[in-house]
Length: 328
Ligand code: CP
Ligand code: NVA
Image 1 (cartoon, rainbow, N blue to C red):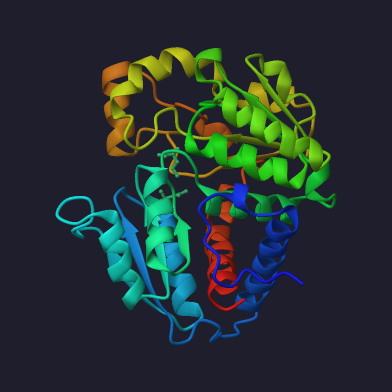
Image 2 (image 1 turned 60 degrees about the vertical axis):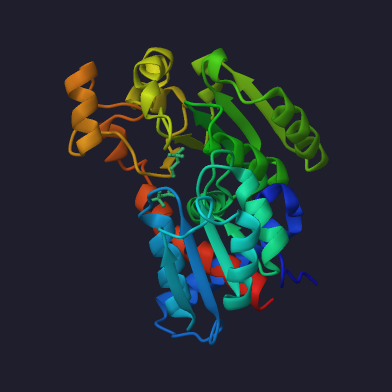
């Protein structure tokens, strides 16, 4: 029997394939429960703090609504003393006295590790420069909802910046599940050798495989095409460099067609640069003359795109993570 009570979710590396599948099944159940309009109290009396160094829409709101749905209270904290007047260690010990669980979004992976080590309560990684494990759970739940076949029969192709938090997190998750996982990116943005080696081992233990390539032929027979922004939070100075490197790797209709799979789905963690409606999108258009970056508006708005189901699933999967680690 699987019991995750008391555990932190810093990276999916720390979870067994069975534990990952358990979280996905629990997410499915909690989503069905919400759909039936059943109000829960699984987290009644729990207090949760959400600590943010970077901006967020989905992650913050997913944690809050998930907590409210099951009766927990939340504090959203963006202006704490942590890292400025107070060490992460001391902050962790204080928050651990007040709260039953801590979510952290920010720069260093080390910060979630220190918070977990010193707080004595479950810590959830809501995105760091290296990883984004809760996003992967939402992505996999969305795949489960769109295919009859099991996750380990899925060919998952990530196209774009192969070194960012999403590429890392998806490689880790896919290796645990045993998917046929492909990263297509320019050589300059291949994932770290260290992570590839580690995850190749995990993938082969679970009947999966990892392919890293710079040619678009890797998309043939893909079930899922995934991409993410060309410059992540904190990389705003790299726009020109990334446009130069990643322009050939844009997800457009030609790429979707190249999969040769009429049932292929398109996923993106969001937010995404598919138009110039945003301040940043408009700015990029003014400075660099391009209106669409990692994905065209045509693909984003197409029948292949499941990005808003995926966004909704952040809430159901994060709820499962909190329920599993706080209650068991
Ligand atoms: N996908 C995701 O993490 O979105 P936010 O940055 O809005 O939280
Ligand atoms: N790679 C993106 C993911 C956002 C959810 C970033 O870190 O900005």
